[in-house]
Image 1 (tube, rainbow, N blue to C red):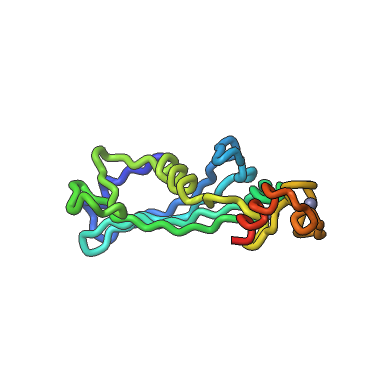
Image 2: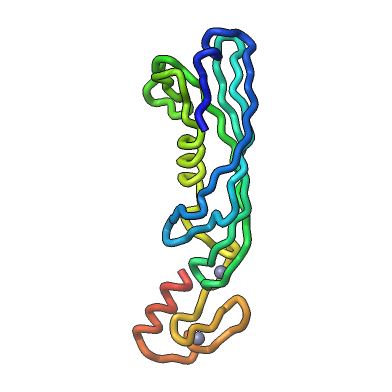
Length: 165
Ligand SMILES: [Zn+2]
Ligand SMILES: [Zn+2]
């Protein structure tokens, strides 16, 4: 999905809305492939007061497994992005600028990398997921076990201490 951006620099008040779907179902991140359904992209490019703005939303359901307890769970992403398109870089530190070198901007490429870079660093079924007992494998969200309380193995005591911190 490429968009011809040249006219936004030439015509004041020019605007184009866009929407498309991205297939990132094969994109793997931290051994997850969470984006089983297409990611919906909706946004616009607009020139106003000599500033060319690109803004869009990316949303999609996610389905993957929890890094701590390994259960399957559903979640979603809902991301907003906004950039200023420039023909020459005004401030090399500013990440919200996109330098346009030709006449076209590849939206598919931009949106794919934005979405992937904004996926969670950890996939958790819930914030406070208790995970699995390292001794017996019990899902500690569903039931308790006595492993870490009853064992006197010093290595487990150390582990218990670690988990409590
Ligand atoms: Zn979990
Ligand atoms: Zn246990």
